[in-house]
Image (cartoon, rainbow, N blue to C red; front, top):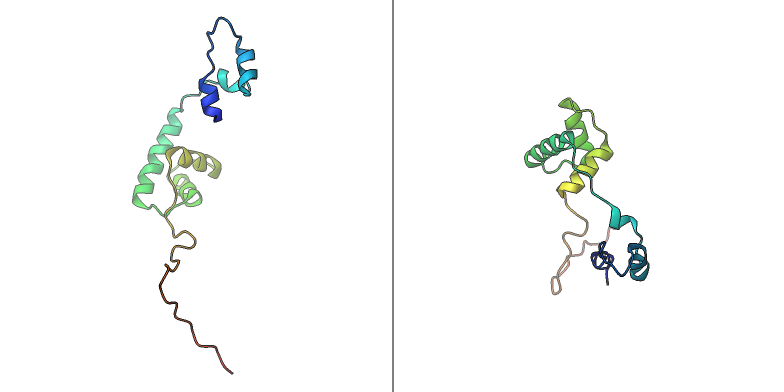
Length: 117
């Protein structure tokens, strides 16, 4: 059973088992049970909008280049913040990944002749 499934089985209002006992039986810590996610700040939403607009214009920009763009627009942010926001939005730079042109089975590979001196 995954951690998320075990966490979903915790019943905070169970009358017969305490929260501590439930967590111990399921093998999870109590901190995720109590955790309440923070809302995004208005400035982060503004930055996310700007990142999204720039990503639509130039999808090849990663976090480094995106940070430069935002700084030029007058939004002093560091790269870690841009990385976090891009990760939350599910954005990645578009560039060729390794091993994109692997030969398929049955294809001949043309070998270059040996260089002779």
